[in-house]
Structures are given as structure tokens and as C-alpha cells.
Image (tube, rainbow, N blue to C red; front, side, top):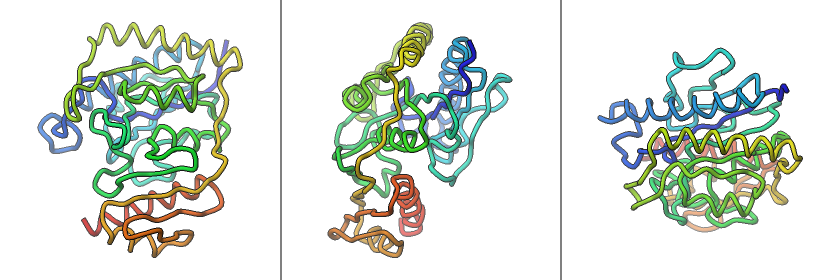
Amino acid sequence: MTRGTVFLSVDAEGMPYVPSKLMLSPGEPLYGELREIMTRVTLMFAEELNTHGFDKVIIADSHGKMVNIDPTKLPGYAELVRGFPRSLMMVSGAEGSSAAAFIGYHTSPGIGGVLAHTYSGRIVQRVDLYDQRDATEYLINTYLLGEMGVPLILVAGDAALRKRVERHTPWALFIPLKQGVSSMADRSPSFSKIKTIIREGVATAVRRLDEGKAKPLTPEDPTITLELKRPWFADIAELFPCVERVNGVTVRLTCGRFSENVKLLEGIVIASYSMT
């Protein structure tokens, strides 16, 4: 059975064996380990999804500068979206897919978990949506998929994210890839165990999709409230249209569509880096 295209958004902080900032960026001493882990885990998911009938797997490298996954390791049925900045950041390339999965996802600062943040730990303190205070990248990206008509069928990452996934997308299977020990320490299963839980998890996620349980999720209110780390970041935000100042460090993004507000958030973050 041919199922068409599946989209994978791949982050780093929810990957197994990734507890330290020493791994997260080019030039850091353990960055090579991060690239290897991200590539290996991503290929495990891609292979299982292809086995279950997805003849194309679009992979969006979605961490940092978004050039982490080794393109030389990709199979012929895969395509890689890489590089930053790009529109809609972590879900760029998802349009037209039959289903989507988030791999290596983490929590937001208010929840806890390993290396928790929302988009930029240097710029953003918290993102609030109409139905979720301290929203995670998982929920924001799920709503972006929903606007495209793409259902989320699977989320894999930090176990601390499970409750949010079960609340908002109960049809999406959650696969824990790590358990937090502290904000910068984790406990992860062996790669052989991970391969087994991925194989079993993908089979379950695809079965739920076939049963019609998965559906696109869209927000009832597209407004985003953004609490920033410093007042001058809010000053920068006020230079953009569709921005209302709430207080010294908080702004409200009020463009007509949710995707437009996310693009606005992205622009504010990028512009704010000039003042860090």
C-alpha cells in the first residue's frame, strides 16, 4: 500500500544521549556526537515509515542553524530540508504531506525537562497561546501543520513532553527517547532498544492513521503572546506590524493567520539577536 509522503521535523534536545550544551552547536567539542545521533535516529524512523508504505520521506533539519543531519547517509526515498532562516522554521516543507512526525522534541522552560526552551533560549522566555500557557514547539508546530491540513501521527523525544502530546493530540503516538535526570542530564536506553520501540511505535502510529483517528489540529484563536527575556527585545518587536505591547517584556502578535504570527515571531527573534 502506497501512503504518499511523510514529513519529519527533527530537533536535537529531545534526542537520546543529548544532555549538554557542549553538543549543540558547530565548534563545540561534542558537536560531532550530536550530528551522528540525530542522523542515526532520524534514519531509524525514515526506514520504518518507508517500510510501512510512505514512498517519500521529507526530513526537515530543525535544530540551531538547521545543518546537523548528515546528507550523505540519506536513502534514495528521502529529501532533506536544511538551512536557516527559512519560512515556518521547523515545519518548512510539510505542505502536501499525508502525515507528519516530530523527532527529538523537547519541552518549554516552565515544564522542565532536558535543555528546555522555546525556539530561542537567549531571546524568548515564554510563548502563550489561547489554550496553552508556556506552549511548546510541539504545539506551535502542530497548529502550523493543521493549517496545511497535515495530521501529526507521532512525537518522539523527552519523556517530559508526553502529557502535552496526550492532551492536545491524543491520537499521536508518543515515543520517549530519554528521561530527564536534571535540566542538563538525561537517561537514555540503548540504541538497540530504541530501534525496537521505533519499529513498534511506527506500526502503531500508522495503524491509527489508517483507522482515521489522526486529524489536522488548528487553533481557535491565532493570537500569540510572547514574553521576551529583555525589554529591548520588546522594543524591537514593536517595530513590526501586528504587534501590541502588553508590558515591559511582553508583546501580543495579532496577524490574521496563525502561520503569519509564527513568521512574525521568527522575525522578532532573528532581529533581537542583533542586541544580544
